[in-house]
Length: 188
Image 1 (spheres, rainbow, N blue to C red):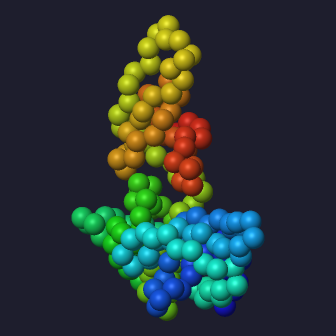
Image 2: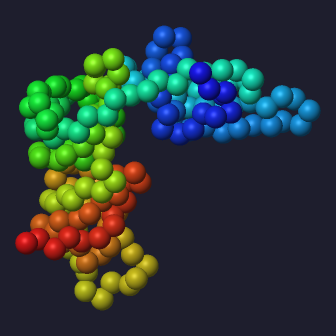
């Protein structure tokens, strides 16, 4: 058990016999009233979100997850299949458990699967993923610098803003934490 004031983004907490990932938290100290912690939580099982306010003196149960390194194999509808790199055991996760991470899953991507009591509950992506551009507008000769970015559709269906010199077929390094273009990768 931890004090509510120790809650941080990314933590997994147990609330009313359900596991929640803390998406956002803010300590509020209003004038003469007692401090409180305003949180935005996502239910790990069904992906639903809720906002919950803890009193500063409340105690919260923090859930500890086992992290297992796995490789993404393939997708079948809304089910995603992964293989443990040590035991070669395969597991499947529903799209709801993965959340926005589905936009970065390409075959042979090594990532961390979070397990709670032997059951997979979520994924932890690497900080960067290399994805190929499948669709973007061509660069216009003589275009002004005011058009400093353009949309590009990547091989997973993710659409991000990229610099004007990016063309179809380029491989880009994407920051998975902020959905941002980082650099163009040289293909060997």
